[in-house]
Each structure stands twice: as structure tokens, then as C-alpha cells.
Image 1 (cartoon, rainbow, N blue to C red):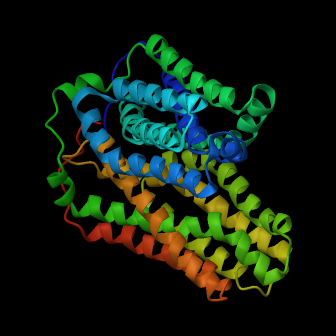
Image 2: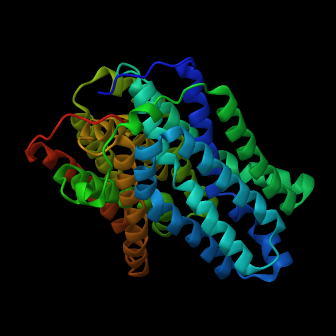
Image 3: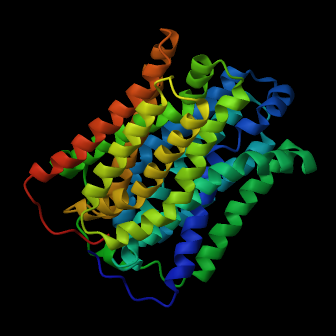
Length: 401
């Protein structure tokens, strides 16, 4: 484990600001959808075209995370984080000036470039500046910041649009990111990883491809993301068909899942700091989550029981996040932590691409209960992938983050 670098910035301040930057990154992911109707009417674009804008954002974010990890390895996470946040904020703010579809696409591609820095830079900084006895809680705080960004985005953007118009809503959201970047640049005396980056050998795609451990982690993230996408994107439609409920009622189960996930994130950080066997935590929590999902998705229990079971499944997902991240941190060998996290979270993006098509086919075939079965199967496959790392030959000691 990396020894925290000395620096004059208190760790709690650094953790708070890095986590708030992560909140903004997730807020920016959902900044557009609440304002789709206003943008469609004034700019003259279709919902399909606005959907392409979201896809453009996801493409550059996913493709550039590993290269951004290489950059973090060369110059340190602090500079990359501040620069990426500024690019992300400027692009989101620029949407307030957009006059055409192609301008929106260009700005969203640029916003995705900025968004790609957060995981490699954030995890490099936190791994360097936070000791192993508090790393789980620091990573949990970081994860909670991202979750809160998703929660805050819709009501905040709607409120800003109601007060100032949709264009100024984007400008204000972008301005918040620029303010955060400025505060970090002035208020954080030492991000801690720049000195270590200066003396480090370069990361490469070859190192990633030759590491069975990292390839298995990539696959784990892919499968875990595919499992989660079934609940997030298709549980409401599935439950609506199975129970004949209105959408609002069916959505209460998804709400329970999301709320319990958030409530369990910080306890999961405490658990990660109290255990040495993080793979066991992953296996137990994901196995329980799969069991709750299958049981709740059978369609034979009262709907109130389904709400409880999906809530318990969400809690298992929240508990596992910090242990997952610490496990990835320990897997960094001759590849830096920032690159490792950039690489494996690209797998998360891949899972979000693969999963929806499968779930959509199951729903179209009139098998809504199989959506829950498929989600559970993806979780079980993720467990097997993580546990199979135990058979991989041990590698060198972890490199500096």
C-alpha cells in the first residue's frame, strides 16, 4: 500500500473537494435530460438527436479514461483533475450558448473529454494521500459524492431553468465547476501524487494486456455494470408488466434500491477498513444481492415484499463499493493506480452498453421476470470472475499511485 505523501493540506479537505468534484461530474452526466423539452423547442432538435448528444458524451468519457490514466501517471492527478473539471464545466456551460444540433454534439464530446479524468485522477490522489486505515472510508465518501450528483442533477437543473431560463441553467452549472476547480487550485497545497509520478516508468496498453489480474477486473466491472443496468433501466417496466401497476407505483421499488444503495455506501467504507479479505466481502454481498433480486423478480410475492427485497439488494451494492475499490487498489502492480482505475471503469462503460440490449430483448419477448434472473446471473458471473483472481500468479508489489 502506498504511504501517504506529506503535505500541508488536511486530508479531510482534500477528500471533501475531490468528492465534490466527483459530484459535479455525475451532475453533468444528467444535466441535459431535464431540459430536453426546452432545448428541443428553441434549438429545433429532435429527441433522437438529443439522445445522440448523451451518447457522444458517453463515448469520449469511456474511450479516454485509460489514456487519462497514462497522463496521470506522467504528471500527477492534481493537474489532470483540475484541467478536466475546467474542460467539463466550460463545455456544459457552453451549452447555454448553443444554437444548433452540431454545436450541442461538439460540446458534449468536449464535456466527455473532461469527464474522463475523474476516476483515474481521483483514485490516484486518494490512494496517495489517504492511509490504508482510512482508505475505505475515503473511497466511500468519493462514491457517495458521485451518487449525490445523480440525485441533485434533475431538481437543480429544473430549478435553475425555472428561475433563469434553460440557457442560464447550463451557464450556472458550468460556473459551479469552474469555481470548484479554482478552489482546488488555490486551497489544496499538495495533491501528493505529482512527485511520485515524476519518477515512475510509463504505463502502456501492453502492460494492461499482459496482466491477467487487470483483465479479470475489467471483466468484473463489465459484468457488474451489466447486472446493475437491469435494475436501474428495466426494473420499472418489468414490474409494471408483472403486477399491472402504474409507472409511479412500480418506480417505488427502484427508489428503494437507489436509496438503500446510497445509505449503505458509508458503512461499506467502514467495512472495507475493518476487513482484509475484500474479495470475500464482494462475493457475499453480490451473492445476497442476486438472491434478493431473483426472489423479488419471481412475480409471486406481494409488491410490498418486492420493494423490501430490492431495497436489500441495493444495500448490498452500496456495502460492496468501497471493498471493490480497495481490491482494485491492491491489484495495481507495475501499472499505476490511476491507469488501473481508468482501465477497469472502461469495463463499466462496456457493461452499460451490453446489458440494455439483452434486457430489452427479454422484455420484448414477454418475459419480464427474466430481467431479474439475467441481472442476478450477471452478478454471479462477476463473483466468479473476482474469485478466479486467486488462481492468478502473484505479481510484483504495488507501484506508487
